[in-house]
Image (cartoon, rainbow over all chains, first blue to last red; front, side):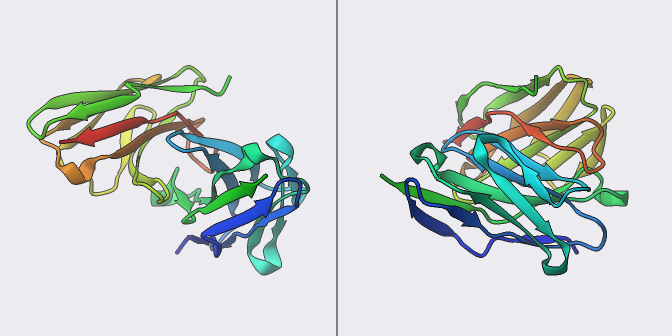
Amino acid sequence: AQSVTQPDIHITVSEGASLELRCNYSYGATPYLFWYVQSPGQGLQLLLKYFSGDTLVQGIKGFEAEFKRSQSSFNLRKPSVHWSDAAEYFCAVGAGRGSTLGRLYFGRGTQLTVWP
Amino acid sequence: DTEVTQTPKHLVMGMTNKKSLKCEQHMGHRAMYWYKQKAKKPPELMFVYSYEKLSINESVPSRFSPECPNSSLLNLHLHALQPEDSALYLCASSRQGIGDTQYFGPGTRLTVL
């Protein structure tokens, strides 16, 4: 069965520090992987996605993520965090066949707090 | 343009009311989704429409009734809701569903009194 684990419920970093948010997935085939960000009371905004090819994916707002098949991980990174990055971050895996057509499996989310 | 619009932004309704949520996209996407999101939780899938046909219903109570009148519009009709149905309701769309990126709207904040 497909599942996504985000082990960190809440992370606090200082502005300008580097950031890594962890994501592990369980999926039987080649996964489609996504990171979304959500500000309070807002919808989800796509940061980046991995379908195939280069395992280091660049996204918007200076974020990147690396797909590591051997570790079933898709961690999100940013070299220097800005106060505006404070939000909830969701990792998701997309299923692509049969009855799971169109379904996204979300992790529980990681809340990022940025100290000035 | 990757915009999905949702109206209204906020909705307060009593348990005996009938109301509707509306979602619209003009990206030519053929899959559209309704999600329910409670505070501090990830979105929970409710319904998926693929080519205007309902393809996934996640055992949602019948007081929620989806409708897809055409490829650009998705409605969620609400009737006799309970206070526990209060949540953020998100709409999303994707090209056709198979592994495609889902683009989300800003959501409708629903409060049931």
